[in-house]
Amino acid sequence: MAVLDLHTVPVTTSPVRRLPQLLGGLTLYGVSMGLMIRSGLGLDPWDVLHQALSLRTGLTFGTVTAIVGALVLLCWIPIRQRPGVGTVANIVVIAVAVDLTLALVTAPSALWVRIVLLVAGVVGNGLATATYIGVRLGAGPRDGLMTGFSARTKLSIRVVRTGIELTVLASGWLLGGTVGIGTVVYALAIGPLTQAFLPHVTWRMKG
Image (cartoon, rainbow, N blue to C red; front, side, top):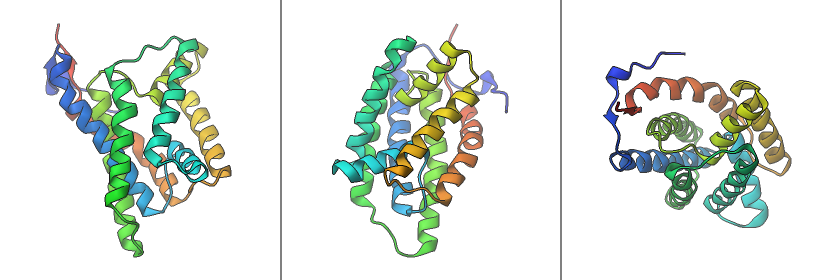
């Protein structure tokens, strides 16, 4: 894992100055989700579940992500996690962005176009994840569940994340969500991509 050089990242104490980056990162996250969906080549574990629930309930994909996010947020109570402005924005902005993307981008038939959408979605998701994490205004509901559960159980982040995502993936697949090569690509690439982008988008607190 690369070491973050704090001398190369922005310095601020004001949350207001960081809001544009937060909103931009969350918007990009929603857009990248939409591109992966339209590729039809497989989704990340949480989106496999979101897609399955969307298909079964008739609700839009964005609506389902918002509902699931709110339910996951309730799970923060017993593990004593505290939400920030970024946590609430995560639920709302991503839901709107993914639905708008799905409304504007149609599913292509050509395989090469689907591959392009998948690659753009995965890379965009890595940049988006680093962008909203780097702004330090509160974890997303699913990230907070992972870190909070790890802190309470003393299990490693790796073990907790793997356990949660395998459970979510299996549940989504059994309910009819799309699992494919894109799921594998995402699992292998998202960590390295996020780490590569983090030094360029992380804010260092002044003082």
